[in-house]
Image 1 (spheres, chains in turn yellow, purple):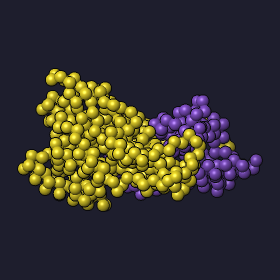
Image 2 (image 1 turned 180 degrees about the vertical axis):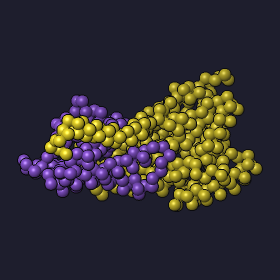
Image 3 (image 1 turned 60 degrees about the vertical axis):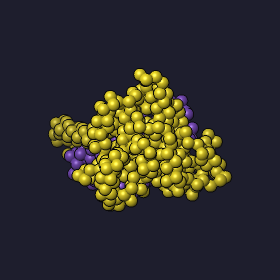
Length: 324
Length: 156
């Protein structure tokens, strides 16, 4: 219920903001009064990003209160193979995703017609339309809001990192020594809390926009209903003869990148690895199991048919038999 | 063995399929928790797939399909052929109710996993806990009936 109200308020305020922004030619909020049931998506115009990291600063500042506060010393982990992941002494790291850095600027040097060029783009959670991190979390500790935001519940997360394992981009980052596991079986189960961009859900609930969008001096990002964002992304891509990433990846995400350079090229040029997601094509991870799930409806029918077949076979065989 | 009781699935092949399916669905169900790698079980040669969440998720659905077919065959078979002269035992009723709960919560969780289906966090937590709790209770009940030799149905 809260989400509904928040969304309504969001769109009301967004309309106001959109009008203001239209006048000032700052395309940060794209609102539609008639499509309030849609998931919210962001459009990232890579051609506008100058890599100034104002978004990174804003994200860190805005979400500082949500960052984990681990209790030290950490419990001894059993068995020994369970690694402690501690970023609490490396909070300044900002060139990758960490529990204390939910957004970073990824850099790629590529060859274009005009020679060598550095492309920069903000990277964070893609907020999938059907997020595996949320759908496959065994505890319900990952949440997808009706407005498409996926986020972690720090009070419930045990830090098992399944969400990271099933994420095509390995986005969530673990911090040991915080969270519910400390109160249950700290040595034997769990290992902290998972952290990632929650697209400033609290700011959106209050009618605001994510801090990274608000702080960007180049208006790289636009937020709005997914359908409209996709429409704008295609228009933008056409205008620059560019490329789109995020529309179909993992079955569709709510983060749509538009770049003048092919994403295959960017993917080859960026530094990838732990906390540094790639830009490769990502298949819909949930689709295979969901196709099978849709076929589950046939299973009871097969069972009933088999039982009826057995019944008639028995009747035929033992017309005056013992069983009936 | 009590002469007044019979197994609802006298065919050893059906019983074998039922037991194997229960084993696979339980194993892949527990594999949804990140425990098999941590506790070296996925390190056992041939069991590495237990740490592949998408594989175990798929196998869990596959086992659910077989289990649904077996349960419906058993239930309809009982209604058509055994109901007049046999009744369900108390342990049979308890197990049937537990299985119904497992199927119901499992079906809801499968629906939740489709794109566009939204459940509140509270509902998801309730389904998760109920599904796991029912599994543990069912396995305990199954162990109890194996030890005590109880059957699903008995002669009236």
